[in-house]
Image 1 (spheres, rainbow, N blue to C red):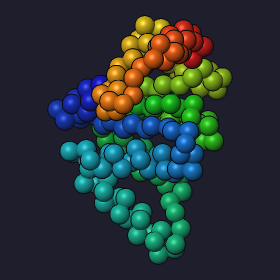
Image 2 (cartoon, rainbow, N blue to C red):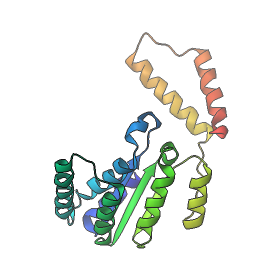
Image 3 (tube, rainbow, N blue to C red):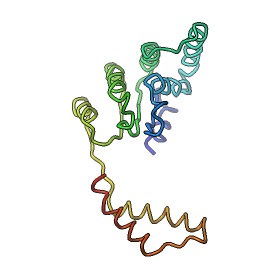
Image 4 (tube, rainbow, N blue to C red):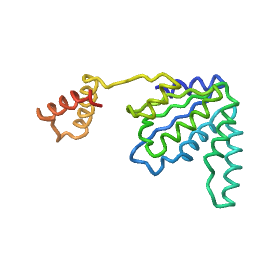
Length: 190
């Protein structure tokens, strides 16, 4: 919902939007060049600057294809900073920042560099991890969001109901309902 709203404003304003989803199951793909490159690739879709971004990405690709190397973090960051500077504002949304465990602190350092120009805002979701909490307290406003027991219970019940409809042979027993209740009560520990 947040990303859709930001993207809608980017179509009418000189605003860029980039988002990252960090999945702990995909640690091999969560490298700093991949994450920053993803933001750069998303800028390639921007209606005003997209053509220039694509041209710069192609130029960088050709340079490294000849050398059989990959772009450095510095090269990607330089392109990203240059294109962000040509926008009135750039929003970055990061879901599960804490799951970028191997590069999370480096990603925050790169975000600080982007934010130095004053045109970048970051919204990140994360569990309460020290270095992430400290950075957001220093340069932003952390907002604690917790799952509420009734919401978790409703979600689990709805998901099991969908499962029941797709599998008529499956019937929710009382024990399953008790498990739902127990899981819902544990949300305070999430």
